[in-house]
Length: 418
Ligand code: NAD
Image (cartoon, rainbow, N blue to C red; front, side, top):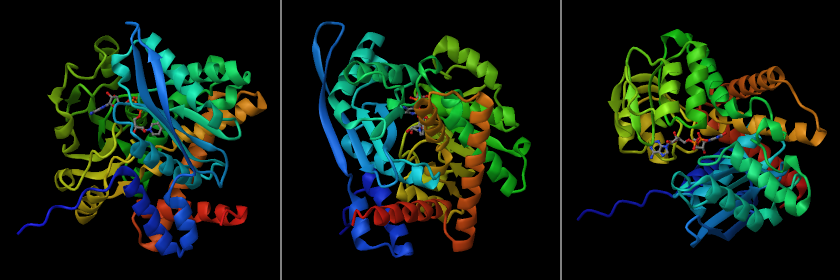
C-alpha cells in the first residue's frame, strides 16, 4: 500500500518553518515563537470597481501586518490572480525578517489584490487602486504602515495610492514609497532591487575568487527586478545568457546584448521572439547550465521535483520565496548554495526606507548618495550573513533567519509584547 504524499506546505507555512528552525537554534522563548507564528492584523476587504464596460466587479484585497516590534509596517502591494491571503501572509512575514536583516526600522507587511492587471485598462487599474486604498486606508499611516510596489504594481500605482490617501487624510507623500520622482519618490528606487541583486552576485563572485567576466547568469522574469538585474549585472561585466517573462524566454550561450533585448522589449512588450537568441520555455530556462540562476518572477518555481535537475552552481533568490523547502533540500543535497530572498532582493525596501526618510525631512538625496548608501548596506549585510553562515556552519538562509529572528525577538522582549 502506498501512503498518500504529504501535502506541500503553504507559502506561509514554509516561511514559518524557517523561523521555527531559527528559534530552536537560538533558544527563543515559546511565547515569542507563538507571537511570530501569526500576523498581528489581517484586513480582508471587498474592492468594488466599476469596469469600463459599466459592469461592477468585486475583487478581493488584503493588507497583512505581521509584526511591528521594530517599527512601522512596511511592504509592497501585489496585483496578481494568485495573490490570495496565504501568499500575502507569507510575504508579510518575509518582510518582517528582511527589514530586520537589513537593520531597517520597520516591521513587516504586505498587500494584495486578486486580479489580473494585464487584462485591465489604465482607467480600471486607477479605479482599483483607489478603491483598494479607500478600503484599507484606515490601517495605513506614515508611522503605521507604508506600502510600496510589488508584482503587478509600479510607481504609477503608488502615485494613485498617495493621491487617494491624500484626498481623505491630507497631503502625505511618505504614505507610500516607490512613487514617481516628480511626486517625492527617491532617485534610484526603481533600479534599487535589481541593483541590490547585482551587488550580491558581485560580492558572491568575490567570495568565490572569481570575476564577473567568468560568470554566466540566467534570469527568470523581466519586470522591474529581472530587467534591472540584467542591465546592472551586464554593466558589471557578468554574461547574461538567458532571460524570460510570462510569454517565454530567450537563450544565447555566448551572452545576450541586454541593450538590444531592451529595444526589442520596447516594441514587442516581451523578451520572447528576440532575434539573435534561441527561444526557450520558462521551465527549461530554470534547468539551463549556468553559474548563477536568478529566479526574479514568481514564488515556488524551484521545488523538490525540478530541484534535482537544476544545473546552476548557485541560486540567487531575486523573487520572493522562489525556492520551496523541498527545493531547498534538493539543492542542498546536490551542494548548490542558495542566497536567500531576504538578503538578495532587500535593495528595494532599503531605498524605500531612504525615500521615507527623505519624505519625512522634505529633503532630496542625489542619485549618487542613494546608490552609495545602498551599496554600503548591501555589502555590510552580505558580509555579516556570510560570516554568520561560515561561523555557525549553517546555510545562508538559516544564517539570515538567525540574525533577523534574533533582532525581532529582542525588540519584542524590549517592547514588553510578551
Ligand atoms: P513585475 O510585475 O515588474 O515583473 C514580474 C515579471 O515576472 C514579468 O516579467 C512577468 O512577465 C514575469 N512573470 C509573471 N508570471 C510569470 C510566469 N508564470 N512565468 C514566468 N515569468 C512570469 O514584478 P517585480 O516587481 O519585478 O517582482 C518580481 C519578484 O520580485 C516578485 O517575487 C516580487 O515579490 C519580488 N520583489 C520585488 C521588489 C520590487 O522592488 N519590485 C522588491 C523585492 C522583491
